[in-house]
Every structure is written in C-alpha cells, then in structure tokens.
Length: 267
Image 1 (tube, helix red, strand yellow):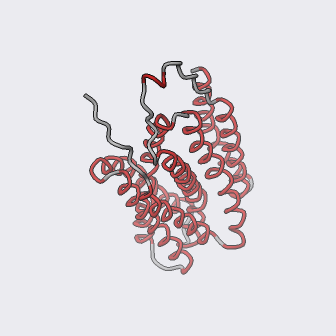
Image 2: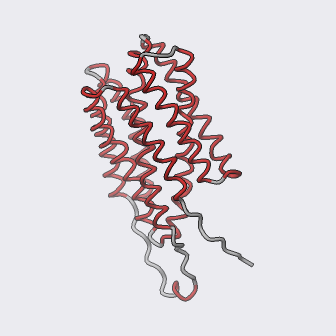
Image 3: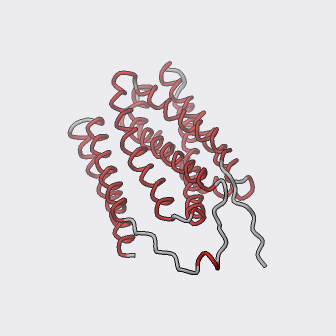
C-alpha cells in the first residue's frame, strides 16, 4: 500500500506541476519545445509508475481447490484492446490539447482569447461526455457506447481538420465541432471500467493493470505526440489532428471486438 500511495502521489504531483512548467516553457520558447517538455514529464511518470507498482501477492496453497478458474476466453483480448484504446484516446487528447489552439487561430484568424474560448467548448463536450456516455452504457452496453462516442468524436475531428485545411466554415461551425469532438472523451471512463474486472479475471492483476496505464502514458502520452508534432512542420496541423480523428474511428471500429464475460449464476 505505501508503494501504491507513492505511485498515486507521483501522478498527482505530475498533473499539478507539469501544466505550470509546460505553460512557462511555451511562453518563453514555442509550443514544440513545450510539447517535448510535457513528453518528458509523461515519460518520467510512466517509469515511476512502473517501478512503484506493487507486486502481486502469492496465491494461497488452497486456491486451486477452493476457486474455479475465472479467466474467460476473451479476457486477454479485452486487456489487449483496452491497452490499444488507452493509447489511442490519450494520444488523441494530447493532440487536441496541444494542437487545437494554434489550429483554430490559423483557421479562423482568431486571437488568443477567442481561440481559448472555442477550445473551452471542447472541455465542455468532454465533461458532458464523461457523465452521459457511461450512463448510456448501462442501457446500450459498453461496446455500443464506446463505438458511438468514438464515432461522433472522430467524425467531428475529421470535420475540423478538413474545414481548417480548406479554410471553410465559421465560428459557429467550429464551436459545434469542438463540442462534438469532445464526446470521444466519454469512452475513456468505459475503458478504465473494463480494466479492473479483466485484471482480476486474468489471474495476473499487476500486469493486466500496468500494461494499459504504462502504454497510455508512455506511448499515447509521450512518444506518439512527440513524433506527430515534430512532423507537423512538414505536413501541417490539420493532417496531425486528422490522424488523431482516425485513431478515434479505429477505436469505434474495434470496440465490437470486446468480449463480455460469461454470466455466472450464484445461489
């Protein structure tokens, strides 16, 4: 438990300190240097989390005789899908948070304050989605809710990228697209909710929980954004954010591969 608390404290400290440092770097240099700085924070956090994650307790000698195997056939597939979805959703979130502001300013010829106001609508969309999408999953199922939220967010993201590339549309269209773009964030709580149950069913809780988290923070939060925004000078921000939208569409397409656990009847 002390190591778990240390891991949580490390991530909390990074979430509090990193934004202030990255913002100061962006003001002093530019957004590319700030992105590399933020990637460094994520890399350090992922390494710290890997080192601090507690070891799995040794099973009791009578576990095999008292408990039936609980790993269902789709369990490992679900963990693999959750890892891929975590990487895609975190990478998409970093792409938008780092690239949408400059894109809006160049697309609509806005000042910093106006672009910030439009970007805040993305935050409104994410906040609403994190409340509504998990509730909708109780009726629609996790696969359908994840597919719908990712599809809406991906389509809106493609709309932003295409409109910005062609310099089409106006402020109202951009505002609507930013809100819809944030709907994809509703899929992240669903993915997170899948991981604990599958981790217990896998029989290897440490690996099953650590793989999605480290993959999301290291690959989705650091490596992919660093590579993408380094290439942004060659291909442009619309192409980078369009690629982020494609990630969401891939999440939507692969969400139907999620296997529900078998129903168990208890007396």
